[in-house]
Image (tube, rainbow, N blue to C red; front, side, top):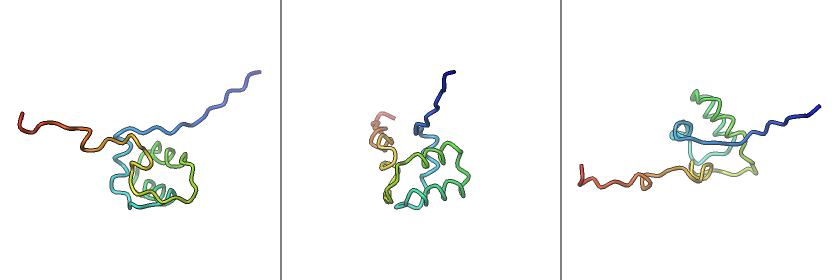
Length: 82
């Protein structure tokens, strides 16, 4: 009989990450999980936060959790064209 192991991998989308926009930055992993629960964030957000390997770090922003988080510069457009 073969055993199958399911591994959880953290994944982020803009829709999930927006749930942390109003988080109390800087924050610890536990504070972010508490915020996500209290604010009614989807379970995927809480699971992603639980997947973080925590060494008691304090996170300054979402970029420290999701390095590929798009910033305003990523959506560069020329306002003069509109």
